[in-house]
Image 1 (cartoon, rainbow, N blue to C red):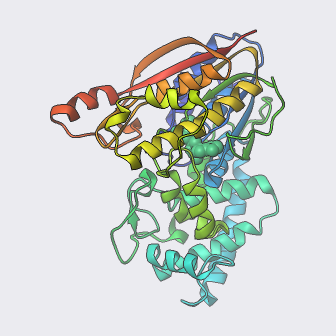
Image 2 (cartoon, rainbow, N blue to C red; image 1 turned 180 degrees about the vertical axis):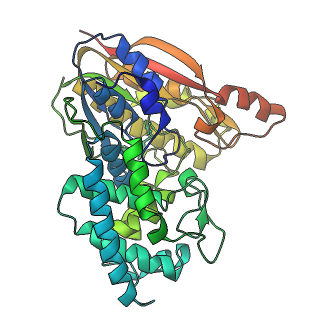
Length: 407
Ligand SMILES: C[S@@+](CC[C@H](N)C(=O)[O-])C[C@H]1O[C@@H](n2cnc3c(N)ncnc32)[C@H](O)[C@@H]1O
């Protein structure tokens, strides 16, 4: 068993904005001693809950709607044999180099891309990297071993989703707001592909040794409609998206288009994600509007932003209902969340989640606040003066809400 949280905190397999602190999961699990638990994260992101749960010998289940998050989480939580992975990466690279030689500016695109997707790819990638990425993506998709294929996709993606520069023409893709900054990328995919695969092996805490821990089960799905039986999980630990916060798919599109996802498909996914800027209509159920009213000074919000908040509460209501259904009686549900500002109005996401989960039969066990380091913030900071300064203080906190289903 992996004995130290340091192993998990030190490396990851792929950048992911607003990752949850692994220590929150680690400390929560300490309270359960050696009993093996069945644990769910229904909005798993990069898989922090799952990797910590698995490393402690628990049975971990994860769900996320973002296909790239699922690939990253499966890579972080999966087993890999270093030699096998690097040998497959070398084979893929050699084949891709041959393919790239015969590609032209008209054919250097992801497989089956439509016109809109091709325009997107032309905007974000220069021709040299288009050819190289087209070659690599073709040969990764032909790898038969599903586990190796997933690891290779993560290596592929981490060349694009980078903190500084990578193989696209953008900077800061990993913070989800990519900006096109050059006409020629400073590195090429063929130069850094093997290095990317090596970094993944380094970031995976289960690589190299045969592990006895049960494998994590991670699927693409929707936390508003979970595909699990009633009363199935001992524990849920999750950090839901904030209202109006990170638009994960905006940056992730740059990788996902190479994995046979069209821009149309990704646009639909983005618009229907929790926390997206799309409006909801006030529902008849009074508990949802009560939760909205308690979120803050809602009257001061313009109609459009009020609509976003209603939509967020509607979505989180479905999530809380599903979580309350799948957690065992007596089981804990830990929500790690922070607060948002909408048009200068402070919105208590944690209060919305607390109220909605109470409606679905969960009781408040504890509510703790924790300082949030700047690099873990989910939103750009508000201004440094006046009301902005007060908000800064409040938004540097995250709330750990533990709810319990009555036995
Ligand atoms: C704050 S992040 C989770 C970060 C994660 N705890 C980690 O440490 O990496 C929220 C996640 O919720 C996912 N999400 C948003 N709407 C969802 C939905 N309806 N069903 C499942 N996941 C969803 C997003 O794709 C994102 O990965």
